[in-house]
Length: 105
Image (cartoon, rainbow, N blue to C red):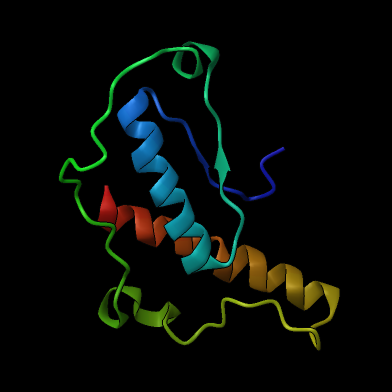
């Protein structure tokens, strides 16, 4: 069950670090959970990784990029009915991680 939740699947040690940071950024930006799945071949592998290596920055979308979505609230409001909460989640919050990924990757 996806629950409209983005999942990241790293294929190596470098991607574990990169996708971990990207997952945190996606979660903070959108207010949604972000999944992280690692297959056993990647989890059981061993590799030396230099954390000081220059990585491409994670770019947060600006107002111009968001266009019509910039005024939408990313938070579920207590006063919303269940139907309004569902609408806000499916039609507003789910788009935020996609916007972040389009700029970063």
